[in-house]
Image (cartoon, rainbow, N blue to C red; front, side, top):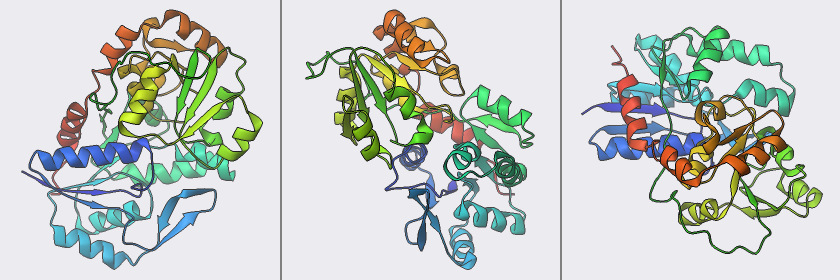
Length: 335
């Protein structure tokens, strides 16, 4: 059994695919007998990102991080995010001559450009530098791997997919809901960079149902009074909403995967999305949904061609056990 150190700037109470991936991976690794330490923001002084207040930036003495890493004596080090914690653990590994792995979860260049007008080129240059000394950069999909290699990222790239809790996200009998059908579902952060505006402005019949929260929620509720905002749902309550809907709409152009897409499939829900990284790797045939640069056209086709049984069968292929095995196989010894 191995001693595995994971560093992440994304952790509870954030609600995101990155947090869910890391949390589930750590739980399974420990259940399989590995010793895992997670260096995460809890316990360090934090300041909120001005344009993204749900994400804190840690402000700490590097010595605290170095001491934590040294005392744990890891066999493997994985740096999951490119924030302050990841930066200092990377620096420690470089000083010690240790090998480490990294992962690419989030399109920070696109987010920073949209939210704070930061040029993409500078952010991509930083990310290329950050991952350049990694012994393995883990990515979720083939299309993301191809894109990053074309942008000049140099580390060896290996796959680290995502999973679904099939005890929660599963087909269920359609329950009566007090909204006109078809029910079009969105699950995720209620923020403009997620493309939710593209979803809400669609002129489609039925009801738009939004699960999640975020800085744009209050304004969007006022702007789109016919949409139904449910706030956060977790566990069985979230699974029930998925199964009760008729179609899942994923309007983001900037996600690297979209765990919510495979949760929808596992629930027997076809998906409508743009043909971008993530959806184009998952929605590969008409019975699973539709991809189109015209989101309204994707919705129309997905409602017509989607097959709930085929969706559930496809979604069941994505298990956290397989993902965690991939993660283990990608790790490298520090020396």
